[in-house]
Image (cartoon, rainbow, N blue to C red; front, side):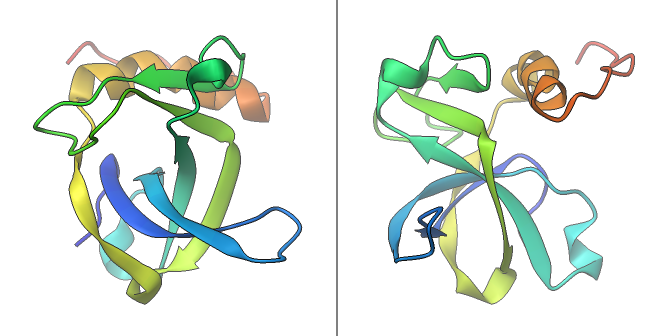
Length: 118
């Protein structure tokens, strides 16, 4: 239902757990057919985060379903049950996912494995 690279709409919790906000999020977990949960990265339309080391800009396209220029914040992740995801907006483009991989890995201190060109 929600595969790696899907862009979904869900209630994303505030980091202090005082509440949440409905917003788009990027699915960053794989093999989601065998799990009840998905791992999501925060997407914001606040483009002031574009130049941050933990974020990657993403332009709206028909494929990804976003309506405005946005930023994926790889330093803001959450694990949620799939049933609380409101729906799917679209899919991130394969080229964008490839280009975003170093940012994601850098957040967690991982060395980027060799990724073949799409």
